[in-house]
Image (tube, rainbow, N blue to C red):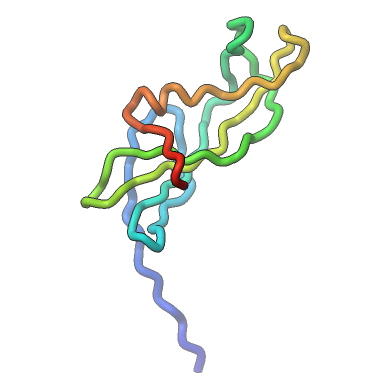
Length: 112
């Protein structure tokens, strides 16, 4: 008879960050929470010309941001910023702004 390993249920953590979907919540080996998210926006504003663009280019490398602690444990949010192509600026890729996350109390963390 094969034994099935029981998984402990992970708690659901509402972030209350607009335009962000939680993809996964996990606990690291050090006991910290790591929440993987993605933006639900399909557009961004070009930082060169200020025009809105919806032409998706690619996902950038993952970044981790420190959020407020939960249950005396550090919380990190991992995301891959979306990059869009601006047709007004010769098609150069434009990174989807992460400014809103930082403004809402989430700080970039170099240690992850």
